[in-house]
Length: 78
Image (cartoon, rainbow, N blue to C red; front, side, top):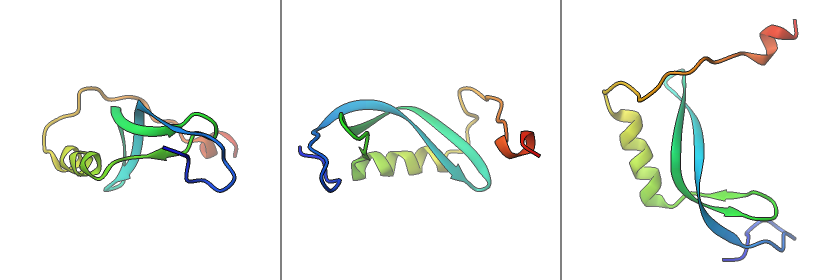
């Protein structure tokens, strides 16, 4: 599929990405999310069914697989 970004000649290809979202004040990282990614500009499209699954993951009450440190760039620049 041709990229939807104006003047980009790229094509989308299926890849698994790392998706980051802020949810209820927390930064959540979900790995291995299927998406379409333009090989030229990097634009990302996520299908509606995948978005629904991400919503289910976010609303799940279980503990995440892994917790990672989060650094705030601005706290180091002051």
